[in-house]
Length: 412
Ligand code: LLP
Image 1 (cartoon, rainbow, N blue to C red):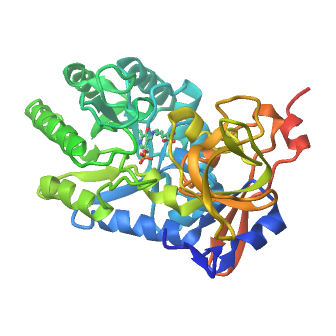
Image 2 (cartoon, rainbow, N blue to C red):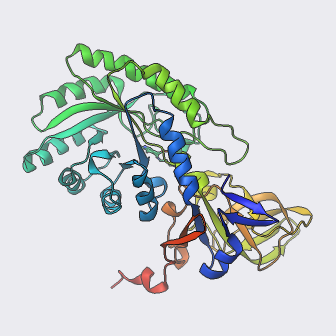
């Protein structure tokens, strides 16, 4: 966590003190470090320097326009899963030839928008979707480049909600059905099967599942070659994990080296779709303690950030490290850090050893840059948080705090 550091007991984002930012912009407050985003992107992308490759940032992890713009400037492409994400990527100036479009439920209107933009490739997840893309492309008089998302039936050994490459998951096509799907695509007028794709899950902390999936894909690639179907792109999805707590996931350089060793002599452009590994540790969520209270069972810190701001603890029982914004060196106790929302599932941490923080003091929730703001909502009619980017000694307001008027704006 290089760019979020304590200096004399005060937490900084790059060159700027967090306390001051919280006073100026209020809380709950997302703060991203530009230097961290750039460093993570470069570390990941350069791990594949030995291969012809394209790194497509997974927009769902952090879709703020300023973040996308910053990554596009570094050369990133984007992995999108909706018309809305396409809109954001184009608005951020991403080259459409660097956009890949995944997802099980692309609507005709979204396919039309992506074809009009001239994206690189659709990652197709069913035969019905293939037919739909062929039809929409035909109506437009264009050919759509497609790959099939192959479900390799590999256990990624992560949380069940974010495992995507097992037979029981809704994603992609099983290998058996894929062969017929490629044959069909080769015969259809308005689609061109140029790629193979897979994404087996998120927050993976070992390399083995990735390699197991890759081996299955490469075996399948040979079969396709036998049928005279030439593949140019191999999209390996995202999924590399990050340290939230004690996890020790492989470094991107190890990940790159292991995959590159298998792929170096293949005539393929490799596409990667990292999200969390770029964004996760590039952001924090700052919150203020509204009240403290204790009962015979628990000590509570009631804070102004809630499950609508960061749902990961409630939804996946995820661990996010929490620290004081200003250290007071008080003795530690076990606390439940909870939000103001009317649900017992509204917590950021449970039974967490923390120094005895007092009312009015602030906490930083770390590793909140991925799937933090993007999964936020207005539940309990709570305005969504402000997002800042700190770049050296500069602050960019990447998203203003919502107002009550914003929340009701579309209600008639
Ligand atoms: N590509 C596809 C097709 C995906 O579905 C995903 C994530 C990614 C790439 C990026 O995966 P990453 O590199 O970030 O692991 N909300 C959950 C994570 C859901 C991931 C969904 N798909 C969480 O907060 O842990």
